[in-house]
Structures are given as C-alpha cells and as structure tokens.
Amino acid sequence: MTETLTTAAAGMLAEVRDGLSRPQKELPPKYFYDERGSELFEEITRLPEYYLTRTERALLERWMPAWIGRLRPRALVELGAGSAEKTRIVLDAIVAAVGAATYVPVDVSADFLESTATRLTAAYPTVDVVPVVADMTAEFALPPGLPGPTLHAFLGSTIGNFAPDDAVALLRGVRGRMQMGDGFLMGVDLRKDPAVIEAAYNDAAGVTAEFNRNMLRVLNAAAGADFDPEAFDHHAFYERELHRIEMHLVARVPQIVNIPGVGAVRIEAGESIRTEISCKHDRASVEAMLAAAGMRLTAWETDEAGLYAILLAAAE
Ligand code: AVJ
Image (cartoon, rainbow, N blue to C red; front, side):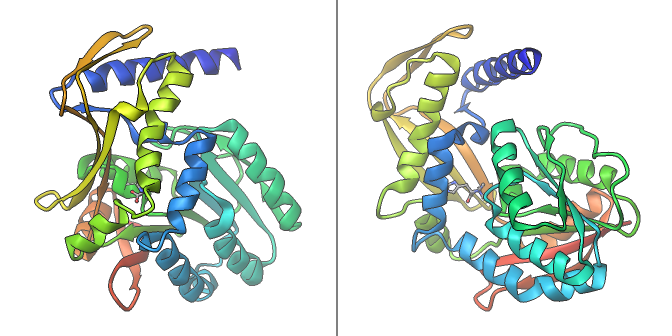
C-alpha cells in the first residue's frame, strides 16, 4: 500500500514538473478529481448547457437492450468507472439478457472503487463485482477466468481527453485485453456548431470554472503546492483545426508557485496552464482510431440532433 502511494506521488510530481516546464504549460485532467472535483463534475453533468451526459444516457437507454441482447455478454469491464448511473443502464440490460454477470470497474482510485463495489453489490445480487485498481493508460491485467463474451466499456466521452495518437494507444490497450467475440462500447461527443460546444464548457453558473480551478486545490493538497486558485481565470475555447475544446487557467497577475520536489515555477500575467483537452469526433475519425487499434465498428447510433454517439466495436 505504502509502495503504491509512494509510486503515485512520485508519478504526480514527475507529471507536474514535466507539464509545467513546457512552453505551453499543462497539467493532466485526472487531477480534477478529488472528492470535491467529482462532486463538481456531477454538477456539470446536470447543467442545461452540458448536453453530453444526458444525451449519452438517453442513447444507452434506447440501444442497450438490443445491443446487449445480440452480444449476450457475461462480463462488463468498465474503464474509469465514473458515477454508477450509466453503468446501471448497461448492467440492467445484461442482467435482463443473461441473468448473472461479472462487473469489473477499473479506476485509479481504490477508495472510489470500494464505494462503487459496495453499492453495486447491494443493488445487483446476481452480479459479481471485481474491482481493478489501475491507470487505464497503463498496461494492466484483467482478473483471470472472466466469463465470455466480455463487454469492454469506455463511456462519458472520456476518450476526448486523449489526442488522437494517445487515444489510439489507449484503444490498443483495450484491444489487447479483448478476446475474439468480445465487444467494445464507447460514447463520444461529436463535432458540431462550436457555439454549442463552447457553451457546454462555459456554463452561466460558473461550475466549470470552479471545476477547472479545483485542479490547483488538488495539487495544493496532494503535492503541497501553494497555487492561489483565485489568481487564475477559467478560459475554455473550441480549437477548430484540432476539433477540440481546450480548458486553460489564465494567471491574472505574475506569480511564483512553489511545489516541493519541483521547485519555484514562474507564471507570467496572462500566461495559461492547459488543464484539459476534450476532442470531438465524427464517424470517420472514430473508425480511423478503431482501425488503428485493431477493431472495427459494428454499431453506431446518434441522437436526433447529432450531438453525441454511442458505438459498438469488435476485435479484428
Ligand atoms: C469527463 C472528459 C468527458 O471533456 O466534457 C466537463 C470533462 N471538463 N467539463 C468533458 C469536463 C469540463 C468531460 N469528460
């Protein structure tokens, strides 16, 4: 346990040092999510401007019974096990189709996994919950003897946090854990009028701005840094060439941030730290990523307005 914590802390410092020494300073979006960050994200998913979560939920409700009825998976492996709500739609369909199943939530947070496992075990008496603590971008092994076929799921458009090359690397990892006959379920936010996308990341209530600043609080608590979150403005814009939202924290005044193990980092007035990219896709870009990872699309559905897609893929 101590070993894990030490390794994680060292990894964090290396990432922070690395990210803050680039010409465009950046920090990894996984550092949004302490308890407060997860709460803020939950709040984002209920905002009127943030269409992603509710659109994905409606698509899952509409299509899971049919897709699950065809695949008849005996196990569900979910990357970045998030809040359990979207999981429940998939699990409900699996339980309805095949009765019993094994659910493998994969997440970096052991605490989070434990509470998810406890909750789901209580709600699904025929589901065996086997959590795996792992970083989804690194190699990890599934529990041995998982019943097949297995449905591998990556929901919430979290794939958008990865630039195309990194996304393909992640999907290759998924492919490496798939057997022939397994399925891969993913949710992706689609390219559309940039004004609609920008509104989703610049909500009127300012929740996304607080979520963005929360990363600095996380680094203060976890790495002993002395960021002043109030000295940074939230800035989110759609980068049209790269089809992605970029979220930045822009320094209001020049400042020097001290981070033990990293040192003193100078940030000029108006200089920004990029905290997240959220890449938007279309069917062609998704098919290209899948092909590069050794998979092929077997089902694709969008909402009527074409805001969001869920898809199923098979191993080639
Ligand atoms: C959880 C990565 C899908 O990119 O829309 C929401 C995170 N950031 N508002 C997204 C997020 C700002 C979200 N993902």
